[in-house]
Length: 221
Ligand code: P9H
Image (cartoon, rainbow, N blue to C red; front, side, top):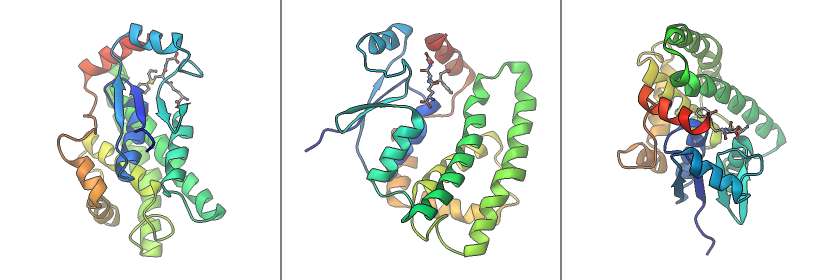
């Protein structure tokens, strides 16, 4: 039997969290190797394990994969979480890239200087509620289906749920004008593998607080 994927990153969300989500949604068990210092990161680099000297790195199927999108694409394809044909996949890529744009804003928020936080939060809220969420609300309304693309559970559902929950952590009522997304959130959260991932004790990482952000910055700079 092939060995479990092994995730190399710090013990926090950052650029690894979506990979954790996708593997969990696919019902794949994995191991995590956390590093907590510059020295740990340097060791990985010296071992030649990081193609571009960066993490996330995931050991999977005999490869040492880097680049977040490459990792996510591989996992999504391997576990059948992509579209059924080229056009469905193209649509899914558009949705997923937009979700990742919003995700990037939210992910980097804890690392912003204190005097920039308020403005940053306002921008995130504005983008979520006027650029991204209205599109997905309309998609659900127009096709009337359970899932975002192709009437089938996919990476788009996993990634949209992840970003919705991240956005709600920053602004709990952020879905107030999006009733279909609210119902969708409940549905996707109830898929057994996801339900399990959302329960305490799973590999899901907590929201990054200021203290943790400062520690992470020390590893990389
Ligand atoms: N294209 C941590 C928390 C939130 C957001 C980003 C970083 C980029 C990919 C060392 N990796 C601070 O910047 C830490 C990438 C990967 C690539 C890294 C270096 C980052 C962070 C760590 N930095 O999508 O995989 O930027 O390894 O030498 O560049 S994650």
